[in-house]
Length: 200
Length: 200
Image (tube, rainbow over all chains, first blue to last red; front, top):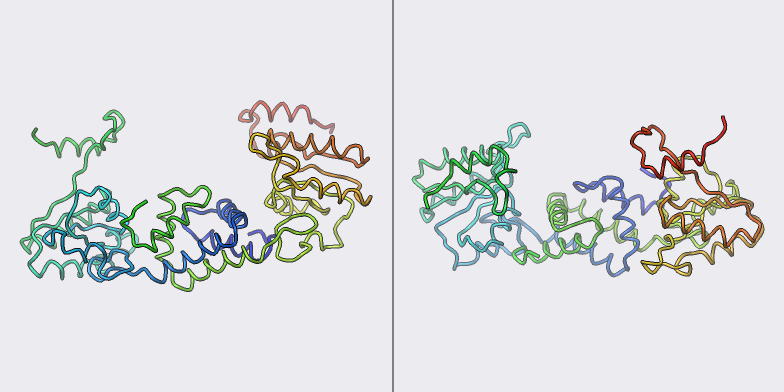
């Protein structure tokens, strides 16, 4: 685009355009933002990118993104070492951590099964999960993949695979979000809410 | 946000959140994008930010953002030295350049008059524009501020100020965009299209 721009501005716009969800207009807007901040502020951003990419690695136990290994969860001996919650991405794990409800361990798959996109079981960290389950410490496996088609398929696949090991397997509940209006819920969600009803 | 994140990831998310139009979710998405690219790719982005901020300066003549001074337009003696098009931001100038219709010079105001936001005439490069007009070379001044309330007010202000110098002042046309449907045009635009009608 825009060969009329000064070369370094053009380069920056191109770099921003590679980012997900950033089109030509947003990239231009971000580039002009860079022009508007002070030199130290720009250096701060620039360094943050470099540092994050250089320092952060997947945790060797659960594959959460971390700058210490094992990560803050795996390294915390106060946490319940008998429960693992399987999630798709590190951000799902963080979302769960924010609730402060779950005190067990995690396992980050690095995606969900998606044959159409070429994501098979060997692409995900399933082998590593099985290795963790084999030491006999784990009593429950909570499958915390998203309630999407692919997340559900992944949950089913894991259940079939792990059931024979004799470990209790649970799935996070689907249903109406708190504060929502039944009238606006989609049919699938409402059907799930009925299916998953509990006695009071 | 998210003190559960690794420190360098948290820092990066915070940096991204400072950018315009980037909320917490987008900042997180961009940070995970950084994790997903290679080290050289991350370095490329990081350097582009630093380089752009360090190298780019306003052109000393027209205040376009440039890495050479005077900028590629002001330095091009083949361009019509008797016409200046006044725009608000460098990106407006680039938009005009892309049409390849205009062969004159530019003057970037650095904004539009907006008393409510504390932008008065002294904040814009109006004094510098007047200096350029005083050398007598300029025959026409095209006011290319956006057809918004503030852009119009700025155009009126400039007209009043510069008219006494005896320079021809023109305003870019407002009307229906090419390919648009009259039925969907707002009243202001349609009224302008009538007002600005031309004989065929």
